[in-house]
Length: 85
Image (cartoon, rainbow, N blue to C red; front, side):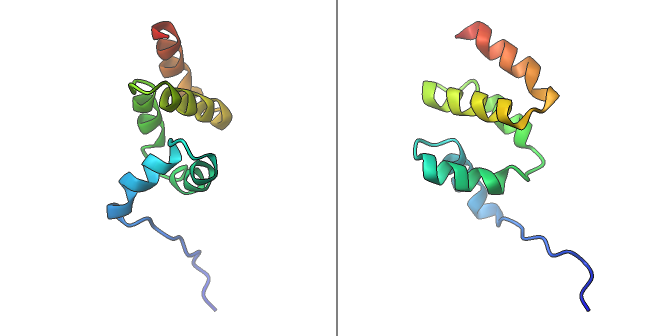
């Protein structure tokens, strides 16, 4: 019996595209991609960077997602982004 949990990994070549979908304009694609990239170790850093994007929609998606995650590390980046808006 195989007792070790299998964990699918995202090929590095797909990470950029998945991230684009996760913060993109298509809500259906965005939610599906978010379920994958939420497991990435650098998620909070990527979301904090998205808060500085030129696109208001990207910033809004990032802020909403950070709030939904409820991670305390998001407080400072969200506060800084709110001051800039």
